[in-house]
Amino acid sequence: MSNDRLRHLENQLEILQEQRAALEQEALMKGGLTKIQIEQELRITIKPKIREYEKEYWQILAKSEVDKIDEPDAEVIVAEIVESVDRLAVQQNYPAEIMPILLELRDDLNRPGTSAAIKVKWVLSAIPPFVGLATEGELDLEKFWQTNFPTFRKWSKELAKKL
Image: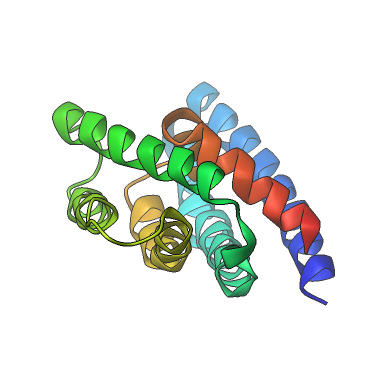
């Protein structure tokens, strides 16, 4: 069931991302009332639907058997997240709502005595609220995750395929 739902959500997200890209491109070429209407369509219809599907997608992954990840793989993912959050904190070019969440995530991942696999499971649990905040700040999450957390993104895609 969750595997079928994940595939469905991935398909829906791909369609919505294509629509979003096309509308953004059209808004750049248009002006006046047409541009405003396109931007309203993006803000009222497309982006909220993307947020809704992304949130459900990550909730399904968070409920999956994340504890089956190998400790060495988890350590690589945790190290990447901590390093990327440190880099993003210095850049400060993301919406203000995102950074406190990322810094809390980094601090929790740096806590000693917890296995990396459990830390990765915590990361998955932390993502749904992060997704909602991130897209509010006009952030393309797919690009954001791929740019800043490529190992985690690759691992989460592989996890989704296994479900």
